[in-house]
Length: 222
View 1 (cartoon, helix red, strand yellow):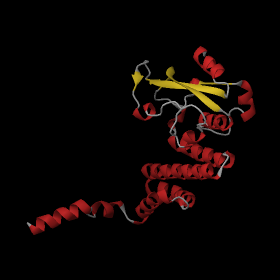
View 2 (view 1 turned 90 degrees about the vertical axis):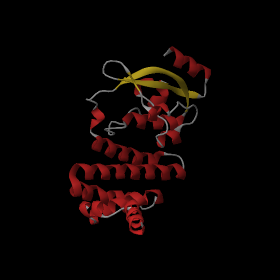
View 3 (view 1 turned 90 degrees about the horizontal axis):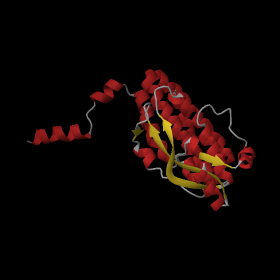
View 4 (view 1 turned 60 degrees about the vertical axis):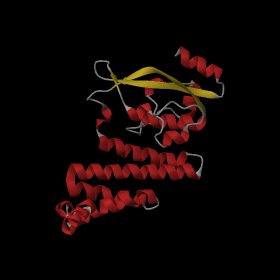
């Protein structure tokens, strides 16, 4: 608190702050996470990196002006998962942030996390991005929000197929296709998952891939 309050006084334009954060196991031992390690804390206007999930902020690491929290509406209790990221996105729309590179908090990882329900979690993230598409200040960021929502929908497609086979796939696929047609970068996922509905697994696994075909051709020539 002392470090962050001092940083806020030194950067008057910034109305909130956060720090780097370590992950520990049930016994307090540090855990390595290369993905999180690459997300170095960022100063300034960080709305776009937050939307792209290029910056991660832990809930215990934030200090913000009370008036700023009141102005953005506090937590959105309709957001079952991702509610803290939602809060940080709304903070990032209103003010620059001062980030502390020193890890000043720890988050414990264990087997009983509320976010363990990954299907519900990704569904909530879709809800979050739909909400942000209506709140962000320009069209480029709105397009980004819609693409991120579509990406979450394809995660649900993969999870649905893994959990329930074709039934899970057919339940989640139509929505993902509907959300993705405007985003060419997602068309490969659309094609791959659509083909997986039509072509049985056994046929696809039995069909030779490019390496197998070239290998057989080399054997024939030899």
